[in-house]
Length: 191
Image (cartoon, rainbow, N blue to C red; front, side):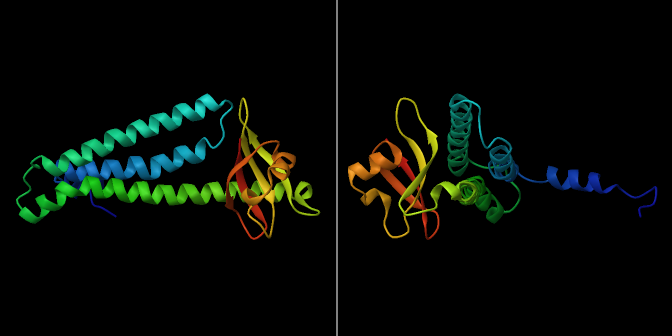
């Protein structure tokens, strides 16, 4: 417990933050924006009513990432605010770029795990449609005018190796690529 004459903790935190150089503050901001904020946004809005909403959000994040990359690269070449330590100044030049790299790679890995979990959950929910003699398929999404995604149960063979007739029978289209979800199921794109 603090007495009435001691400095509150939040004042100490503000003073420490104020002592950071611009590049250190920029790196912290990029880390927060492209790490936790990006993932919270991704988890808060996993599905959209219209594909336009998802496209607009993806374009907004892409634009934000592009601007951040340009700013981070610029900090490498522009002279940083002097901190009093040459080593700290040198590290500060690369800190925003490093923070951006770490968050983009980390968020991509987490996003990939979210996507894989979502597809496995979809396959488990539709197990009754996928049961029986393989190969079987369940359409996940259909694009307009053609194409889409599907979960295909094919334990022994990559569905992209199916004959065109078999692909047409399963997804009413041509399978373009597939990613393995587990030892039985594949997530495939068709067109």
